Amino acid sequence: MRNDQAVQLLFELSKPGLRGVVMPPCDVPARPVEDLLPADALAASPPPLPELSEPDLVRHFVNLSARNMSVDTHFYPLGSCTMKYNPKRNERLAALPGLADLHPCQPPSTCQGLLAILYELQEMLLEIAGLEAVTLQPAAGAHGELTALLVAAAYFRDLGQKRTTVLIPDVAHGTNPASAATAGFRIVEVRSDSHGLVELEDLHRKLDLATAVFMITNPNTLGLFDPQIARIAEMVHEAGGLVYLDGANMNAILGIVRPGDFGADMMHFNPHKTFSGPHGGGGPGAGPVAVGARLAPFLPVPLVVRNPDGAYRLDEDRPKSIGRVRSFFGNTGVLVRAYCYLRTLGPPGARRIAENAVLNANYLLARVKDFLHVPHGDRCMHEFVASAARLKAERGITAMDVAKRLLDYGFHAPTTYFPLIVREALMIEPTETESKATLDAVADALGRIVEEPAEVLRQAPHATPVSRPDEVRAARTPVLRWNKAT
Image 1: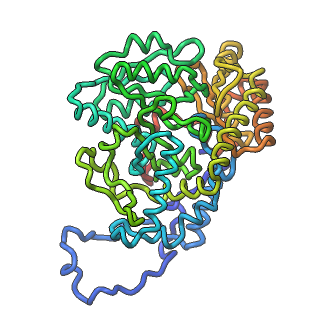
Image 2 (image 1 turned 45 degrees about the vertical axis):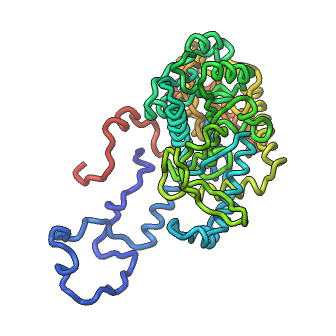
Image 3 (image 1 turned 180 degrees about the vertical axis):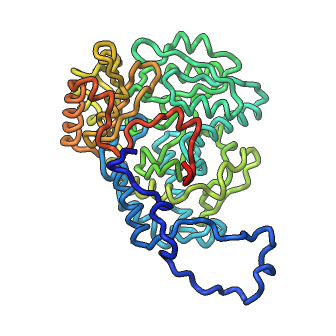
């Protein structure tokens, strides 16, 4: 923390006797406290919490929040994260009393409105996916991956087949191999060709009777749609395996092409990305999984179904189900936001999301490719991956230097050093919600940055409270509480 911008902690601001709240009188009948709580549950003295007035407390946190970047305050070109603007209309609708005040233990007969919303969302996602059944239960994209792989494992067990391998391209999201390993599979990497697409010969060599699933993101993390996808699916199916489509990049193809139509057997959605729900700081989230008909019996319970009389219920009677993967029905608040987003846009609007996301990405690519090398293609889908490798070789400027310096210009840094097959990678995704003026501004900033002296870039950012923390040390020896002695 820089001294001129240091912020005192609540413990340092604390003054004995200050109060921000007045506690109501105890409504427990007058009895000795020892009768109400066991002795070992009582502290000998009050906890050493900071003592502040309400204005001091509010100002402290509001001032801290003003130091953060967010999609409400800054352009967020995080490649592969799809950080689009979150419409506040959806927040207001999700907070309506008939939705926000429901309790997960209520009988289905008392929450028919919410169940109707969830059922209609299931139908929307199935139409978008081109598949036959969906679960809304998973809590995030990676959780959706894990859920789908557990469904695949249950499917092969039911067939009496021992399939132990998951094939994953070298440009995959890191959650893909992590999810596969967590589900108990062995991971085999499939190489990309010189164009950044799946190398079919390498895929062919690695397909065998042990292959359970081929996980692919299409468009991939280079921002390229793999035109071989139908042939890839055919090859995997001929080997008896399943095709999993990582839906993280659905923003590029929403309403234009359906994964089920090009051979995917299962996929997940990221409502916080494709459908504009807030990312949250690690949660809450959701990761609905859609599957083909043969995998439907293995989906988690419960599923929302509609009875012949039009009433909705939660279906628990699915003998082959892998069981629950989330408490109650999942993070319904996130799902309601996604439903509102899709209902607002309708099918034509959903397609325009993809069209404008692709247009914005290609416009920004065209603006920067003359001074930032883009190794794979002059055209992209929703994102592209530039490289600072030439800058590093010529002037010692790294991708991290460029990303950190961008913060000084008022823009969040793009994703760096991913995918791993691109040296000094800068992965940029503008999304469809940004204007041409914003794209021009960030392109101009990048153009100025690459011309700046190397010593300026190596010390960037210069205008933020924290410049370059030791990220390795922070990850390995985190300090999670304040200690006055230090």
